[in-house]
Length: 299
Ligand SMILES: [Zn+2]
Image (cartoon, rainbow, N blue to C red; front, side, top):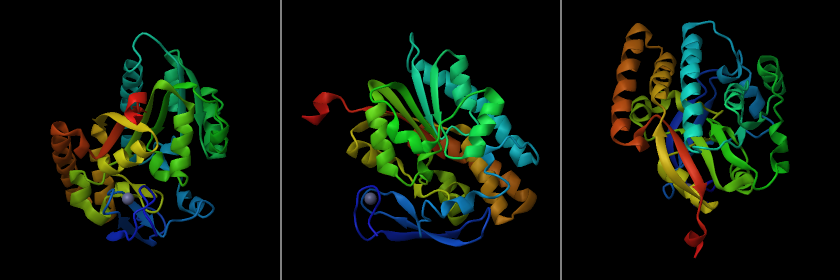
């Protein structure tokens, strides 16, 4: 199997792990020595992947607030939603535009941007989640199947919050983003970073590997390789400060380490953030601000 990003042959086995949250099935994480992307093996097909999302319901797709982990997730989501909205707007001071959110979930981000005066379009693969978005915000999300019907040169911002690692058609999606994004627009991609301190500490238990729902595991280097090949360039990297804590807590849960684990998660999350404070490319999860390469870059 060749690397899904750079097509280099002979990926190495990096980690043997499993689906801790649902099936307990074993999976291998392969590592490309050339571009440093990691990917899940065997890779469940698009038809088979649905089975792996059928636990209680995937947390970001529900508004379930039972259990302290869920409550924490939703508290953090409310906080980060405000930050995301403010930050995306700050990229376009003085004017608003059309936002496309791919993997819109229950619609919280598109709703928040709409309230700030943006025109919004949201894509979401799951029909019942789209219904939920309508129930919550009266927003009609479209199926992600319609991605290749999107208009060209239309959007000021295209966002993918923790989505790219789930997408089978990695390059076709990004190519479509390239076509649909305006020349001076911004593509915003948030993905976990396996080169973070918390990932290195938890190894096979690192919850953001989330096997096999996460098909790819990105490093900043592999993101640059992938995006450059498709005509993009990275403008900036921003750490997602809460993710280190949340992912560490979940990793401790998978290790079944009890109360001491909760305490340790706080410490590991904090250390991870201290590294990220010095260097955003070390963050547990990174928001990549991406633009189209300027014309002179091609020459
Ligand atoms: Zn590669």
